[in-house]
Length: 180
Ligand SMILES: Cc1cc2nc3c(=O)[nH]c(=O)nc-3n(C[C@H](O)[C@H](O)[C@H](O)COP(=O)(O)O)c2cc1C
Image (cartoon, rainbow, N blue to C red; front, side, top):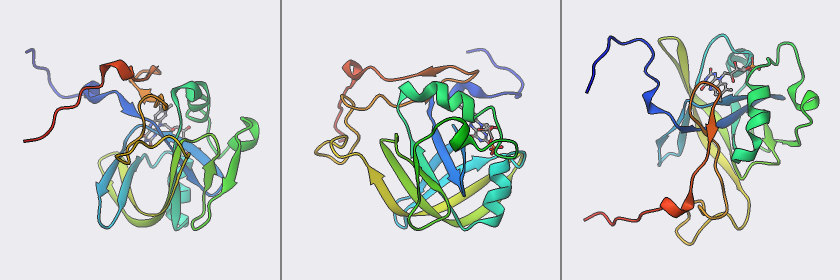
């Protein structure tokens, strides 16, 4: 394999896209990750340049919303405008309901969403890792299979492939290999 000096390291794509909701603002994040099962912790990486970052500093929680691939045009839009200048929910006709336990919104077109209480926030280079404790989970009935996992035949998750490209899965490629 070829080597290179380290600059951009975007070879980890594709990543699912999560929409982070704080107060009444929303922003897509491709950099997000589960952190702990017990307690249930979820992390999102937010640049301090984002309006979302300033909201996260002031508020005690946020939401994480998962949308299908068909919503890629919306993601591109809310990922290129700032809540500093626009009310994205209104401008983009986003159907949303206030979160129950934190200051944020649940996007009604999501197939699943989490409400998170802010647990920790640490700076790592040019992003902040914002860790939330999941306090409430939403999911569309019928999308979960008998193993408690998203049904690949029903949900076409939105994957971000970098450089404004979005892709989804082909359920025919599913392979199951039991761990020994
Ligand atoms: C697909 C996609 C993924 C993104 N992922 C991240 C991310 O993980 N972290 C981040 O800080 N910004 C990310 N961005 C950029 C922000 O979403 C974008 O700057 C947005 O306009 C910020 O909105 P705000 O100023 O209202 O917070 C992403 C944008 C797109 C389109």
